[in-house]
Image 1: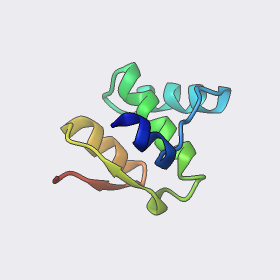
Image 2: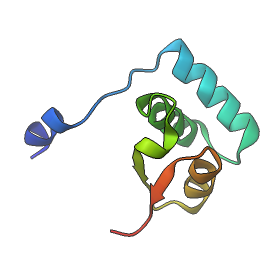
Image 3: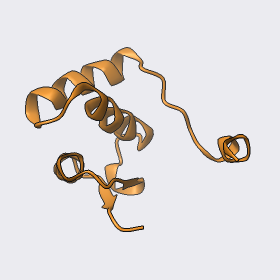
Image 4: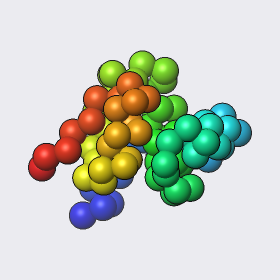
Length: 77
């Protein structure tokens, strides 16, 4: 199943830019490292146009942080 899906996603590597963004996100928002990296990767994937990429999230704190970062968040399945 995942094999078929992998052709439809973009994998964001933990580049220096993503690491720096994750560090900033940890300082600004009440998130742990894994959530900060997820959010930083989403921001990198959006190519600085945060509204262009929907962010699916069911965690309250991560949803709040993503919205504050300007992402369009989908919280309902």
